[in-house]
Image (cartoon, rainbow, N blue to C red; front, side, top):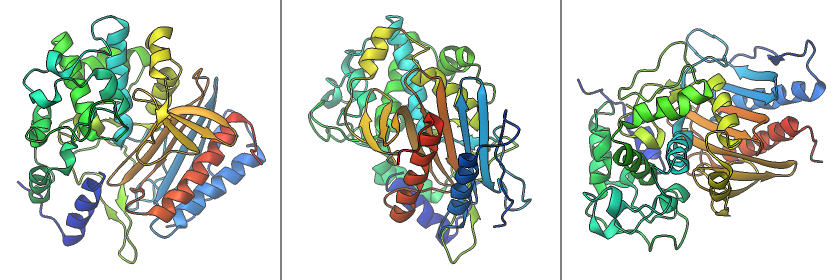
Length: 391
């Protein structure tokens, strides 16, 4: 049965597609018995975010250096119960799912099943001839020119009528199949949700294997991801980090299950946990899934930012972004979705990592001032991860 939407929910969906509290006290935990002073300061910054106008009900940051893990959390995972956030809470990972499609594709490149020069015309001949020259490399780098299917009026109309609508994920590009490329392939950078749908379809075409199975075999199993999945429905397993629409003066609205995952699929449909995302980004940014030649090609940086922008100065690689902060460089990805904003990052060797999750959608279009504050806090977390003050 279609979900009945409030006017506020309709506005929230429109805002998403345009792109797409009680103090609990310090909760820094880890292998050290007494947290260092700078970790107390990080908790204060996280706690302050939960009290900003439009800020998230919860913040959780997982910092890992080699075998030492520290969790910094503020606010509550569920406003109804007051439960605190945990690294084992399930959550929507939003566009950080694009890094997973990158991991699948680049592993297949390393195994010579796919080539970065493979084209849509060769691997996906049913797609429009106007798109035929687009390469896998351009899709992964967001330089393809593919029109974004989430901007399609028909797609938006279906979601507005029924946010739980079960799309055929493998036909999402049909919503823009009548449109030409936005620009000549490779001529400029433009972040598009269509790119990673095409990446997953290429992987399926090359292997004859469903994308969900490729994720299990090429990503989840090698990196020991225990609580990560790509569903088709709208439910989130428990325990979960609830996501909220926070639009004062209205009270926060739980939107964790507002939208189904079938409409975002390889572009943003994955559900995971902070613990699993930590394992993922350490392996992915650390280049553990494929050989040095593929790593080198992945890290040929161009001008481009993730959505929303990550900390520091952003540059784009192949399904990976470089964040040059005042304290050093980390590699990773960001994402946002109704109820969630995500950052995963690690040093290029994968030995130090940060997973930073907040439970409301923050981006330049919806909350530009809060995004600026969020990026500053994320950069401070990166500095703590790298052991530098940056002052």
